[in-house]
Length: 347
Length: 251
Image (cartoon, rainbow over all chains, first blue to last red; front, side, top):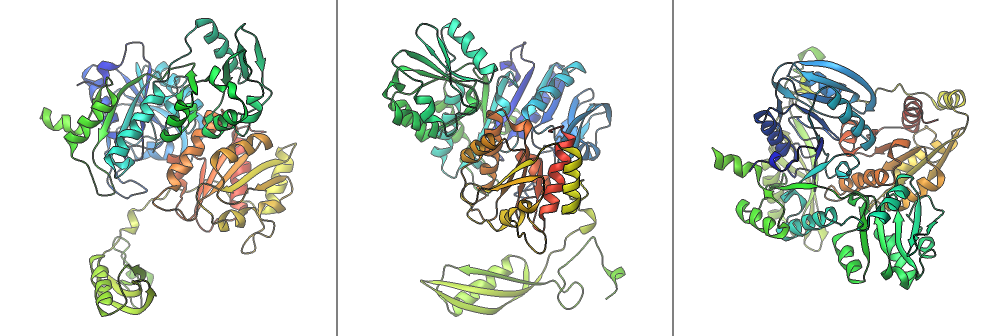
């Protein structure tokens, strides 16, 4: 199965995010590089963490290296640029600073191994992706770090591949249910009525908090974050409220405080920008759904596929086929694949 | 012992003579105190790569547990000459110099929040950096003119910390992680970054972490601007914060 077959032509950037450290993000990245080379698609590569170093700095286990082809554009910090074996032509030195030095954009003049460590923040990643496109990359791939997933936000990348694996937990059922929860979050529906959607988008773009009632009246809530402000938000919800628009994050405690302060929470739909803003555990999510809490997003995340890695760096693993099949069943109809296993079968 | 005789490509621990490989280590075993326990400790140390392992001290911990201190000769070597560690590129200023730097470059006080987050209750690290009296003769950030320092203490949930940062309009957040089980400090540290991104304030904040298991190199993967290992003082942190704020134009 080709991962890139699921990437639509108009997608300009895709992110690879992981459920945990060592979930197999770099293996997926290498697969994408190979597929892009076969399709003759010029790509740009960057990472919110660090990729291609031979030894993991936490577990001291071996990590996959990254081999790129001539013409590939990379955005990587000075210290990692100097370690790369591919010959690189510097295109631009950015203002973005990281613990590994300034981020540099470069083009590979030869095939070879590289280390990639891009900018630290999402807004910088977005700008660097745009720059790589202006230098000729048709598709930019952003690799995530550890379990950081906010680069999947539709405001940053157009589509996402989620990597999961045994590293998440020793319990196979827990790995599956946590991955399922993440995919559920990414599948939260966008607000249905187009007119309300436009209002909500504007409120979120202005970084405001507000309610919308049946008659389209907007009432702004004078807060600068929803954190610790659940009771204040509840005070703005009445029988006529339809939507509660929350820019910024949404955590369990905020919703709990709203529920305890007003019975009207069942009548409304809470709206956040996208699923990366939601910090609610699987258990809490289930309980909130039972109590009638409804959540929508403004921007839905496009999950292209989920990849599985049956091995953990802590020395245990799951039977590969069993793990893959269970994950497939849990995530239907989403494509699920084990990149390593396919490589073995192909050869 | 002259330093020229040391082979930096094959370094071993030093006890009494070069390359004798002497190592001391201690651990507890969940077995009763006794000769069988001592033999188990010896065999375990041998599996760890120690030649001639000896139990030099052992003690009954009660409840079927026993404690051992071992000596042994390490079989392994390390190639010191090939090691490259990423270090911070900031020259550390003294407290007075930091204060002067703030006076010159800022028209207001800098707000710094410090906390020990998640499950960690060990405030020794953050206290050493933040508290007025400081640590080891180095005053903490609370004493600095031009810095408003808030030490939130231990076991602070990430969402409380972010709420406080928004309320106080923090310029810098310092996170300490000293003792955590099973690497939980890693998802805890990344969750804070994700929450700051979700709140849209990551770009406005200088974010640093510190602790014995954190390095400047790991900070990059975690999404932090800097990581401070053991042996860092308030002036190291303050120098980094003020320089970074000027670099990123956060005035």
